[in-house]
Each structure stands twice: as structure tokens, then as C-alpha cells.
Length: 308
Image (cartoon, rainbow, N blue to C red; front, side, top):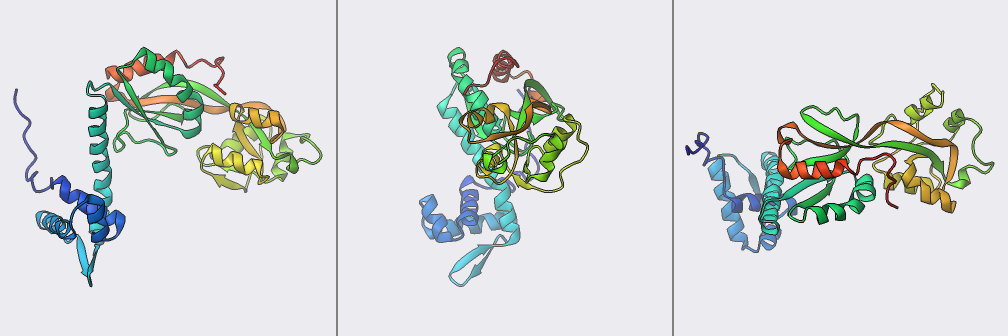
């Protein structure tokens, strides 16, 4: 078999792992002394690694300041770029040692939905496919398979992401809730009255309140409110009386039953978008992904309640 040819000057642009680790540690820890301690090396060894890297690349990466050194802007930028590559190498090595057969799926999940919907179901997958290891990492921001080392992701949206294929898992219905202290006279009498209360917004659903209001015949849109990064934080804000939140029905159910939260107006309201399993189109035929996708398709039923 013909071996692939190396890129021109590839040896120059492929420094040793030891030198890259020294640079990353210096950037992360702020001093050669701390980097040496973290890497179990002498300070002189770290300095030699850094000087060698600088010579190899032909770029000034750090400056001496008295007895210390600091990275140049170029060095700091380079350290940030190679950090993910080093982490990816470490993850690949860990996967190989944990599961040498190669049956591994790296999956990005949304924190709340992943923990409440997927994780309780995973023991069944493990029983059916003991040869496959599923590694989970939480991500709130939209995924980028080109730069993130994930095989697939569970994400919320319309299912139409460029360069990907998707399996719809579950729709979402939300309930407007708040602390009972915000409703001394009981639930509101009309959906439009919610605009008189402080509203809580979630970063991953920027149009949630506008969609909810339109679903109840209200054309006005909210113009203020606080923004929260995930459902766990927005739930706490609602519990402590900071405003009204739109929570998925499965998240609000327990706090409504105990009286910690009160229903502001209306029943659970279906919202645009759904939870999907998403994967790069070019990896659609991967057998490990296929096994997970086939199993997950049997879990994606609207009438199947979320585990409590």
C-alpha cells in the first residue's frame, strides 16, 4: 500500500509533544516554575523545551522579565490553539486504553435534557452493547464537528444543521411558572398580563417568550428581563422570586406539585423546535454511531414520559 506523503516542511511544523506541553503549561499556570512542577520537570528543562520550540518555529514566543518569563501575544495565541489538540490526543489515548476494541462514542449533550432523559436510559444501551463505551460531555453552545472532537451531539433546534443528519428525539412543551410570592392574588387572568411581571430568559431559547405569547394570541413581545445560561440556573432564579420562567413541563412538575413554584397562566404549551441526535453526514455509516442511533430511535417516543 502506498504511504501518504508528508506535507512540505511538516517536521518543522510538528514540534515535540514535550515542547508543546511546556508551552501550554506556561500559558495556563503563568510561570516556568509552576509549569515545571506540573510537568514534573526541572525549570531548566522547561526553559530548554521552550527555547527549542521557539527556534524550530522561528517565532518569538516568550519574553524574559527579570527572573521570570511571559508569553508574547503570538505565544499565548498559539498555546490556546494547541491546548485543544493536546486534550484531544489525551482523550484518544484514554479511549484506546479503556476500550482497545475501539467501540467508543464521544457524545455532546445538553446538561438538563441529557441528565434527565438520556442518562437514565443508558444502562439499557450498555446491556445491549457492552462492547461500546459512551463518553459524555455537556455543551450549551451550538456544536462544531469540524473543531470539536465529538462523534455526535444531542441538541435543541429545528434539526437542520449544515453538513449533518439528525434524529428527532422529543418535542418540548413549557409552563410559565414563578415563586408563589409573585402571585399574591393567584394565577393571572390573561396571558398578556405576564408582561407586567419580571421575565426570565434562557440563553439557548432567545425567542421563547415571544413564541409563548404568540401561541396564546398575544402579539406584544417582552422588552426586558434577565438572561440565564441553562435551565438549572433559571429554575433557581424562579424559585427565589426573581421572575417568571418558561420551564419544560418535566422540569416544572415536581416543584409545582410541592408548591415551591406556581403556575402563572395556562397549561403546558408546545414550542417550536425539538431535541435531536445530530451527527456529521460523512460519519453516517460509522458502525458504533449506527448502533447508538438505532437504539436511540426506539427511545424517541412522545408518549414515553421522562424519567423522574
